[in-house]
Image 1 (cartoon, rainbow, N blue to C red):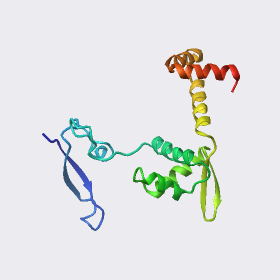
Image 2: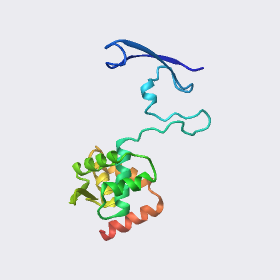
Image 3: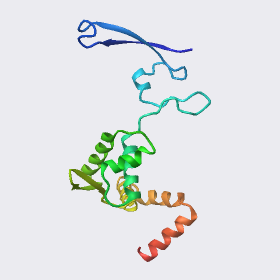
Image 4: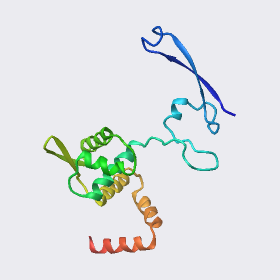
Length: 175
């Protein structure tokens, strides 16, 4: 059974008299819980019951977009223009050029990218390697923990045997 929702919408001038209220009915997907917002439906992934396939493609979180852009920049190495970055990402997911530009500028403002002029456009490259970034992230997480030795012990216990052996070698040699 489909749940129905009635929304009141104000139409702009010219379409109806100014401020006149119109009623619109929308049918919700049967798998959605009662009270689920219709506007939220437009921004989420709705799955077919029992199939696990998405009916509607959801929005990516900003962190996911930033990670996607950083992965492209790390994988390619060197300087990339927004157009080159957009072309690479567009092969995987449809995103607007302006979205890629916005993400690049935000990453530059956060200090994760450096940029320089190349004609009329800017070119971007990461300020850290992927490994340096992960190490800095781990350090940042450890500074927030109250019991640092316990957090490190849990981390090491969760590592596979080969990674623990590698960690021992790194600690012995200092590299």
